[in-house]
Length: 169
Image (tube, rainbow, N blue to C red; front, side, top):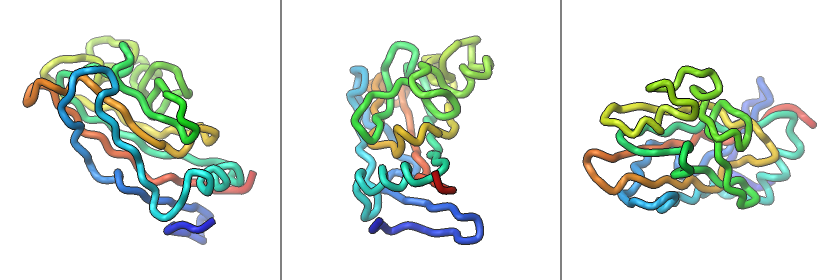
């Protein structure tokens, strides 16, 4: 595996960085998924990252969406794309394709929503975050969002953590 990876030998964790770890503003657009950010991993191809996830016991990747007055998963306005190009309708802290964020899984989303805080579509800053842990879908290849055209009312930022893998399968 040729990549610019950080190996933490004491804990046996492999971390793979990319170009979307910092907070990135979602460009204004209106349609579902109209904003696209392809994640570029440092010197590692998706095939190499697939080999890493398959050889590892566990992998995860942290995702965060900060939002105000937007729609997200409930009506399929946003999603992430798996390494194999599949549209995934879930966010960190939930099973793959559950249609929920972590708050929806716990039952404590804003306004009593059953999906995500960012589906509140109100004038309050909210966030949805957690770890994606389905190693058969990781790493995140792309994120897609919409409903951010009416700036400065509608606005969102995303950040995607390093791919973390550990153990042997």
